[in-house]
Length: 421
Ligand code: HAM
View: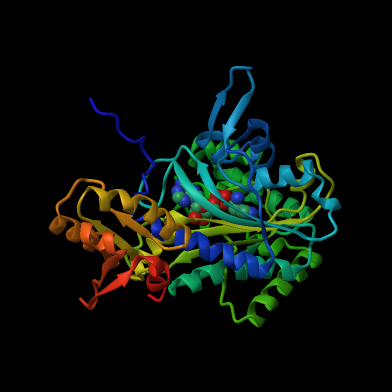
């Protein structure tokens, strides 16, 4: 039996991979403009890192992690998300002591969650994320949100909905938590066993239960916005003002709680409103996580960030019918006739490629006609035809495949001729 790809993963083949490269380039260019620097952290971390940061009671930690014991008996986990590792690295490398503050970082890379695969949901997916650590200025919240919106705008997405909420500071959250317990407790028997446990451990998590989503108590649950203290309310108002000043439209949804425990104050998601996008519409999620640096052993430094998956971004582009530009032309395809011409093309190719041109030759022992076909197939701009006779004279025939024009040229200045385009 042949071996197949694991469920929930995908091969990204040539033809498709160019789209990924395009998005990666775009995201990196935006990060350059916003002064976010790339960070690369390991694919696996100590399991405890995610338990402490993402939270013991979250679905991610309880049900979705790829956790294993290594040969030394340590519990390791394939990272389900990027924030925990970035914050760990920030604390471990004492980035809070750097001269440039806040520390603004971005990352690209595979994340792993044991979820039920469906459209837009994979077990291995690639996140692009940013984290700004060290500032609790509401303007940085707005900057982080605007960076995500800018990426979507620049790749051509239009049908987007930015949803924001505030989860408040710890005292607001405590007041809200008490209200949630009072709300759900009398009828908790009608909820799933997970929710019954959540009431004890983390009642906020009841609000993002997938099974009990439609229970009437969900709709009438106390809203965090009614429990924000003055400081938290003011913070949220300022973030909203900054967004409005940048003409970034948003809606406030007080039921947006996010599925990770480290959030407080600003929480946001960006959804696709494209028709036919499928059931999972969240493209991007993020928020503020003051206290997280301390939770992983660093000093008390505030932070905010987001992550989005490239898989969902590409689905949204498909749903909106946006095609990404991608260049696949080859500058020159060399057609050699005869053994000595064939030999000659080997160093010639090297020379062309060193000069920055994309160049190719036949490696399949094809006849001339088939070599022309091969040149067309790779979308060559020019073919360079070198036979025994040309070789003796130090010339070649160059043919423009788009116009059909051809001429005799000297092989001495071939790079120059091809560069003229
Ligand atoms: P998250 O909401 O768990 O947040 O994931 C962020 C994004 O990753 C989602 O909006 C979605 O685009 C993508 N994503 C998540 N799971 C999958 C999946 N199974 N298949 C495909 N795409 C998926 C975080 O990960 C936080 N670390 C975000 C953050 C950064 N908050 C602050 N800083």
